[in-house]
Image (cartoon, rainbow, N blue to C red; front, side, top):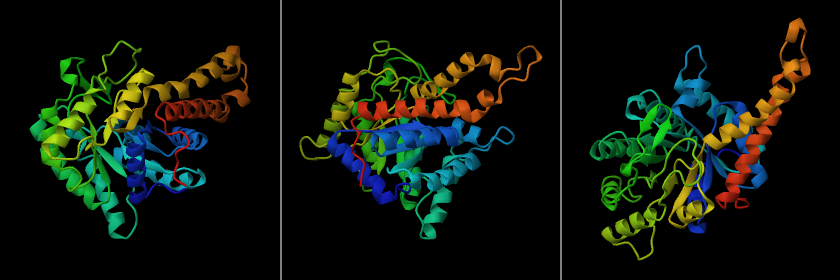
Length: 343
């Protein structure tokens, strides 16, 4: 199927929220990791989200120029071609973008999509993330208002992060402390500034103890039940029906989360969960095994010629793709999106 249209993407998110499941959002940094993500979704019969961070886009731009916009555009254009061969719907998203990179990443990408929409085409990306968690909430939401209007005009969904996620992601670092929990007041201020859909659709990355990177279950105190408090508080403030869930939440820093924590998050309105650390390892681990098992073939040991069949990138690249695709399938199962693809 082709990359999701704006209407299809909205339908995907609506179905996830109604069905209390979420889509894995898989970070990719190459055409090969893109194929691994698409393959994983296809084998799980799940629609999904593929995303590119600022660091990933810089890497995709090549080490000579390291241009984020050209890197992101190139992979997105590639995805629009190859995704047609996979029987699932996939949305393209850009991950964490702090204030100092907006002019060099998200704003130019929105402009690219705006030009496409003006020609009667669909946007290049289906959603973009504004990470203002390092700013005051006032400044964060002011920039969010501006970006939401620009995104909506280009038929794009905006993702906003209003409070910090701990750990480090592409150079954005936050301490692991009590500030990693969004309050009802934070959520109300967000709804007052960005609306509840009437100004454009947005995804909300609220904090409930989330930490980027590698950690074992129990090492980080996640409180996904907090998301219910945010939904209820905003619903009451804006006189929404009892039991309504005004926000479409995003789960950041999900590596090492327990099945119970994930289930609670889904119950409370999470429709998207980011995966990067786990899929990076799933891609790299088979490569390491290949290199160790074939060291005398991939290296020209003692002046020998090595073995072209084992240092050919295709020989270990296929194993890497398979390993990552399997981890994507596991994510689909954990998030209950397996078998839910739109026909």
